[in-house]
Length: 179
Length: 179
Image 1 (cartoon, rainbow over the protein chains, first blue to last red):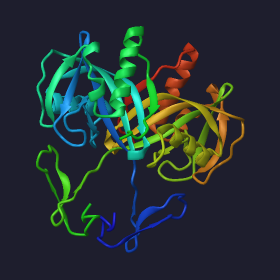
Image 2: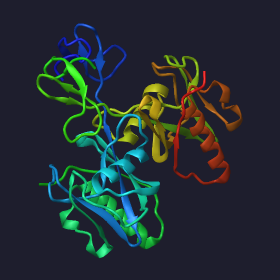
Image 3: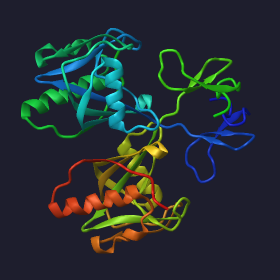
Image 4: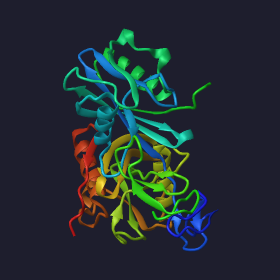
């Protein structure tokens, strides 16, 4: 951030009075431009003993498999965001969303909030951001071809919980990917 | 938002290619400036049969009682944000945080994420944003003097869960306050 979105003057990093952290402060109008973490909302779409995954048609991680998830928008709830992302990426409708996991990814200032959701039908197709969408049984999940550590962790928790017959809530911090 | 924070040119609302919603797009450099919901992280600080509340020294709702909570910052986890806010507002240290509630407040584009936390000692004091901080038993909670509906809902759930002896996870949408 270089300029004030309110008056177009130069912004400088400084600690406002009563604050404890440096912020982008406009040298003309004094507006303080805060930057905060973003929520990524997603879900595990379930159909019988299978889960729905999407093969990414966009970078990063083009061609890798992921769960439907994306940035939450203003004016919607977290669950509504997860439902919307599932429609957009997998052309699939999920209902009965239950909170499943909260994952902090501090190095990119993101908080993933993942739900369990029931597909209303085994009906799906690749949305604009997907190359392919399909249902996977536990043994078919492409563990080595998953897009992100948070997706790996979410599916791993899900499989373990399902074996135990009990889905708790989970909270984890996700470390940077090793490349 | 009127000006591009990247190049200071005028921004216009338009739907970028491949997107579905109007965004602030710079007419010069093409930068897209997304606006997303913010996370407010907080907790119920517990000491024996009491909970810690803060009397607000700032607007909105100056003089009303609230739980320690505030905007999550970049570079921290949600739980770390709740711990930090409890230090800042109540000069108190909480440990053992457990996820308790997720509250959508869509009309102000906020998601409250509330934890249960144990005070390490009955030691606290008013931080800069508080007039007073004190422990309340169930019967002492000032229900008619709470700052926000989300605080009322969180404490109400907490009291009911504690009577049942079981703290689940909760997810609710909070409607605008009636004035």
